[in-house]
Image (cartoon, rainbow, N blue to C red; front, top):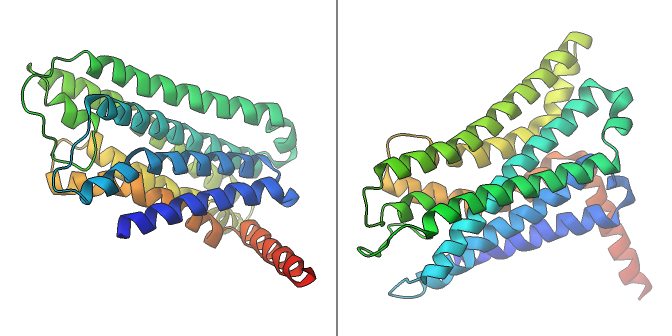
Length: 284
């Protein structure tokens, strides 16, 4: 029931953020265009694993077919990779807005925004398919049990009827490289924002930090579990399972909450939506 309520709040919260950005003209800017895409990705990231996880917990024997397992691996890495690159695109948007404000509308035009989103989906698709192609060709003839709530790449590789140590290491390096590279780019981007603004204004650092707090919080919550699962050399089963559930079920719920609570323009848009709804209801 807890997971079911979390899933409902995740889907409804992200749909609300998307509809709010689409319908409110004050939010028709590159930052919120990217935020709407992040909400869309978060909704699907949660939908890849959580419904199956909920039905599995209601049954004594939790099973999944081979095709379903492969689909989970594909879409977890497809959607997860897409979210990583979207967060990098959002950091780039904040960098241009804060460090080059006079050129912001020229650089971050509609064509550039659409191009960034297309690149994020292509990168995520390539990342997911590259894992699927390798794993689907492995010979599976032995144990068929995975000590987790859903099919994830490192656990499925260990079931192959072969010495999978080298392959497992290679796949983890691949995932870790993508996650760590995106994370480092994000750190460099936000650090450059703070340093640049601090040099031009005494109060600039605090203003920039206030603007980017929501972005930085989401980055830490998403990349922290990913890096620990795929990069950390020591595997702790219960912690890996907790972090896997956290970044696929909890983080997509926290993103709309963080942006709505920390972002003044989103809160103002929610007030306008509430006023419009109350006035429409009064007229009826």
